[in-house]
Each structure stands twice: as C-alpha cells, then as structure tokens.
Image (cartoon, rainbow, N blue to C red; front, side, top):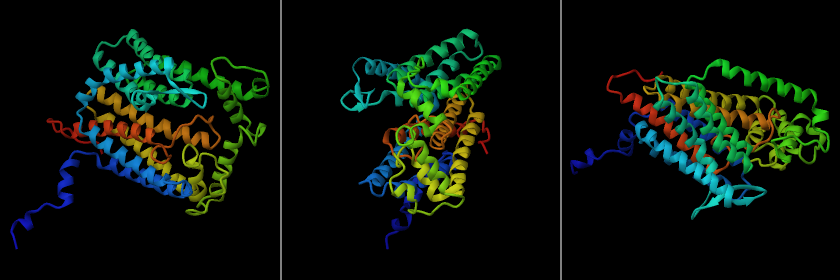
Amino acid sequence: MPLDTFDKPTLLQRVMPLLRGFDMPLLALIAVLMGIGLVAMYSSGYDFAHRFDDHLRNLLLALGILFIVAQVPPQRLMAMSAPLYAIGVALLIAVALFGITKKGAQRWINIGVVVQPSELMKIAMPLMLAWWFQHREGQLRALDFGVAVLLLALPVGLIMKQPDLGTSLLVLAAGLSVIFFAGLPWKLVLPPVVLGAIGIALLVAFEPQLCAQDVNWPLLHDYQQQRVCTLLDPSRDPLGKGFHIIQGMIAIGSGGFWGKGFMSGTQTHLEFIPERTTDFIFAAFSEEFGLAGNLVLITCFLLLVWRGLAIALRATTLFSRLVAGAVATIFFAYAFVNMGMVSGLLPVVGVPLPFVSYGGTAAVTLGFALGVLLSIARAQRQEPEGLPAPL
C-alpha cells in the first residue's frame, strides 16, 4: 500500500485552516438560526413549489458571502466604506429618477440586473459613518455629529420617498447606532426619546379622532397611515387591512406553550396566515412550536446580539468597534421589528426575520453583515499583542 495514502489529508483537515481565527460561538449561533429557518420553511412552505429548496440555496449563498467577506481585513473594509456609500447614494438617486415601479413602489433599477439599492445602504451606511468617526477620532466636535446626521439623512430620505418605510427604519437604526456608540451626548439622545414616547401616548389616546375618515397625516403616505391605525384597532377592518395582524395573533396564541407540533399548524396550512413564508413566518413558527420554541428563537437572537457587542467591546480600532456594534443593532432591529409587527405590537412594515423568512436579498445582506463581524473578530485574534479574544 502506498505510503502517501496515510498522508492524504481528510476533508476536515483541509477545511479547518480556512476557519482558523473564526469566532466559533458566533458561527454556532448562525448555524442554529439557519437550522430553525429551514425547519420553519419546510413546514410553512411545503405547498409552495421549490420554496424550501430556494431558501436553502439563499442560506448557502449567504454563508458563501459571509466566508468571503470574513477574509477581508477591517482596514480594507474601511477603505471600501466611502466608495460603497457613494455608489449606494448614486443608485438611490437613479432609482428616484428612472427606477422600476412595482406595486406602487419605485425601489428597483436595472443595471444589467434588477437591484434594490436600499439593501446596499443597510451595510454601506454604518461603514461610512464608522469611517467618518474613525477619521475624526480624538477631535470630535458637535459639527462632526451634524455631518454624520446629514450623511444618514440623505439615503434615509431617498428610501422613504420610494416609499419603503421598513428599509428606511433599518438603515436609520444602523446609522443612529453608530452615531450613539461614537459618543453622542445623552442630552441630545433623551429629548427625542421623550418626545417620541409622548407622541405615541397621544396617538393611542386620540386614536378615534386621528384615524377618522378623511383625516390625513403629514409626512406619511395613506397606506402607512392606515397601517398605524390598523395596529391601534385591527377590528376596524378585520377582513381587509386588519386581517394580517388578527390572523398572526390568532396563530401565535393558538400555539400555547408547546405548540401544535411540526407540520400541524391549522392556521398555517389552512392558509389563514398571509405571507406565511416571508414576513409572517414567525406566526407560523409560533403556532407549531409554541412559547417554548419562541423562547429558543429569541434567545438565539439575543445571544447573537450579545456576541456582536462582545466583539465590538474587544475591537482595537474605533472603526471596528462602531461597525461591530452597528451589525449587532441591525440584527436586533430586524428581529424586534418582525416579531413586533407579527404580534400586533408594531405596524406591519415588511421586515423579514433573519435567516428564517424567505428572501434572497435579505439573506445576502445579512450574510455580508455577519462576514464583516467575523472579519473584525478574526483581526482581534490575530493581533500581535496577544490580546485575549472575547469570551
């Protein structure tokens, strides 16, 4: 028998060097979330032709992008920040001028392939703001925060104009998290929070008058106003605009503590839950796996966010700290908004549940974001000073 037979490396031995320096707890959380997503998709989308296969393909694509981006050092990512932001804003302006309109929204543009530039801004926005604050480190003034707000307001305004409230909120959350982590004074943070709380309280108190027919709200489109009013009182149109929220809450409540069991959700399989493989997949998952399954899912998201913040805490540059914190915030915002709107706590804004909802664009965007986070974690482990890795 040839001696080289014993020297031939196994597949595991070939793969392990490629994973050297990766944050294994973070990878484990990603794997669990993707596994939950596949189980939920198999059940909720079994009667959709190829929906499960397409979701598996999207997750594998996200993993591929994650792996590629994780190989890029944070310094290279920082150099790419301004160009990515400029390309994203240019594409958003192009969308506003001659974009493709579908279902009343002008969100896409054909550049050889049809793309949605607003998705790019979910990553380009925090990278750009982190780049800005990195270059202003040690000499931050109030004017620098003002410039950061303008950099954030431009793409958010363009995205809201499309209109796309869900994506604009996610971009806004990612950008505001960078500005906050950069050291925004609390005296500037608290007033908007207090005003927002007062506004919500007044909205709830005066809902009958504000949501009366022929009452128009400034700054919001009619359909956005209707979503807020439907959230406050879904029974006002139970077979129309309130149908999504009502059926989602029924499915979540009917699951009880342990759920009805895999493939046994009646609300799901009798097609009472609209968009059950995309925005409302959390309702389908809740019905079949109950509160126990929800606690597992929510714990996974909280651990992922905690892991991102732990990586941010150990980062050795301001740019890395801000970007890692923004990625953690992005995942929190995705999960919080999706679960909140399905549960009737927030308006329906079309935000998917990361790696659980069907959607290739969201999978690619989130895979890129986690690749950035893994790149930052790898850089920490490769520091010559030998700083300890995050726990």
